[in-house]
Length: 254
Image (cartoon, rainbow, N blue to C red; front, side, top):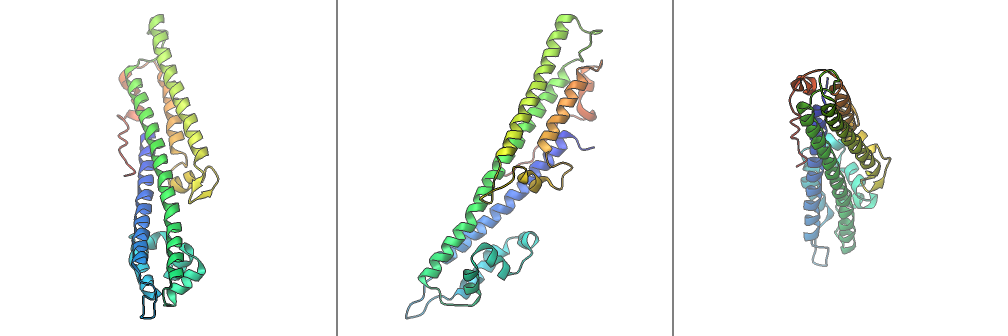
């Protein structure tokens, strides 16, 4: 069974992988933009042709390590996806680079960079949300290891009240963090510059996990453990989740 810690680990790793891929794509488009900026436009004495820029596109954007796996499309489709059909056609026809063409290509390249930059920010916010959940889960686990079960047969009443209130505080922390996480999910709508359905990011990132809502699952599991621990007449040491130690969630989004 996947533990709360494992699912959070895998979620953080998935965010990190997606962010690395986007950063490579953005850097590739920035390199292509630099090539376009350096291009000499056509004059009476000659100038650059679009075939040179097409080769620069292949050497930058299409040479990123995961381009083929992520997009699996030939250069013509890639150009039409990222730019306008007219720009894509001109790049492949080896035409003279006019000032207007250069300006239009720079605008289109910036338009390809911007949504990637925006999505990186979305991923950074998602990682921060996962990290915050991780800290809450770890802190509650530490608390549970130190507490006895709430048992009328084993505790004096004043001690019972103290322990019960500590457990109740842990439940409240879980519930507050769950509410915050649900608000975070509802607010993550700006993906690739579009207003999308609120759960789209979770579906996109976590489709290959056991759940598309790893943070909520981890918090729900932690809450169930709190309820179980405070009713079991056991020693504090046996409250460790599933016989394991702490979470050890160390994955980063870079």
